[in-house]
Figure 1 (cartoon, rainbow, N blue to C red):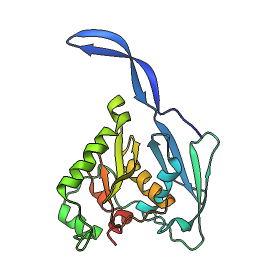
Figure 2 (tube, rainbow, N blue to C red; figure 1 turned 30 degrees about the vertical axis):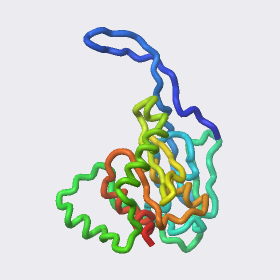
Figure 3 (cartoon, helix red, strand yellow; figure 1 turned 90 degrees about the horizontal axis):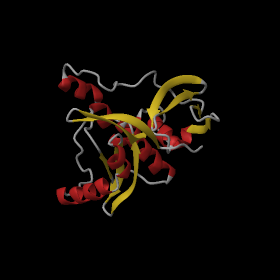
Figure 4 (cartoon, helix red, strand yellow; figure 1 turned 180 degrees about the vertical axis):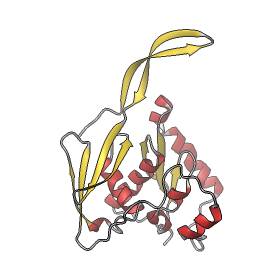
Length: 215
């Protein structure tokens, strides 16, 4: 499957009260519905690239599976708008995600305690100067964002620098793509860090795959 990531459209540009019809570049918004063992789970609004990696990352980050070997196969429809994932028998599927994007947290401390978040004692650490140097390159490589101002970017890094990056209209999807890429490449998340644009909401910090990356 191959999709265009951008499209040229005519827009009405207004500046200082002056209107003009101009051509602009917009990202392509793709809809992908995930079925697990034939049962509908969720529909993604995403950038149409690295879709298999995004699905694998989602399954891992949401705790649907603990390892990629729990996934028997992924079948995409011909139009690329549906994917049916076969999960091995015996794998207990969660009913729903723990948190919804945008959920209001009335008692943050209680939610953190419920989520089981702990300090990362003994986790690998990266100096501030190293992280800032990663971010300089991270920003330099964010070409589609500079072109459209409409995507989030994520990257996986180790002590040597940025290993690879992914982009999407959703920060959750971008991180899922990076997680899926790591597993497809056989790269352990221990000793790594993930860069991401924008804020990091609690549901992302709670991703099981990211919480295990310190091991």
